[in-house]
Length: 360
Image 1 (tube, rainbow, N blue to C red):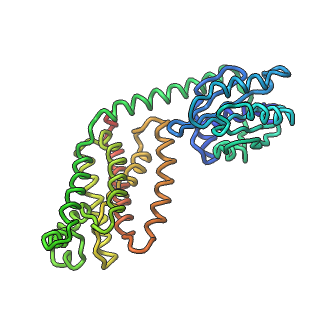
Image 2 (image 1 turned 45 degrees about the vertical axis):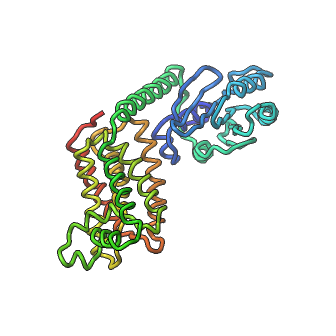
């Protein structure tokens, strides 16, 4: 039961425990520092932090001075402050201290009473805090050792993630860069619209009638082509391809990433040829394949990513997937290529996850 558990302890668990945070639909924050009356949380890569102030640990008249010190230490990024405990007087203190803060345009101020009701007092909204406020978890009272364990786990996860990224990012993504360069070169070669450019474009695009005549190379080469009238399509695909490819290549290795790119391009090309009669070009199916592969690696039996990065990556991939599904049903978009590439990438990455260890 939670009747005798402080609102501060319930918020600590709701924000920093991965299972509790996941039930609220948020990514768990990292408890980066704790010293009564303050607990400091951070969402890695999000440019925002949260300071939880325990009102019960402050004497009467100390809250305003404490808030002033917190605001004075704020240098950059978005910062949110929630005071746990107290009544209406806390709301007034928060408003007054916020009005004195030099960076108040980047602040969000909240009050959480002992009944578990959380209200925004002033400034920016913090979606994560508002989501957990709808159903704060039940927990026991936290001892100093419990809080230290949460803080230690956060430090360990941050160090693990930083080391993973350091070892991963130092490797140049040769295969990814080569594919991106090939796409740009072919775009330049076919962009003029002259007879030679038109013949090259027609030779490499995915045409159902060409496939029926045995021109099977089209099921791969179409992914390197982009329509000269749609420059935005080229840049969107190249940004997706480079961002995901450069992240996955050091983890998978050049050979397995190259196979992944080829298989997803082929699967997208086959799906397009089977289910649509329209001409198809573009690396969107490959980009979808990389998104699917990232989901597959996250769902593999082996732990390929540090826990902190896995939580962040999973949350961001869900957003990317939802947006891309919506875009796939716009007019003149080859959704079959998208879905074929995505499914192939997911299945191939699952097999990678069963048979390989993380390279970094």
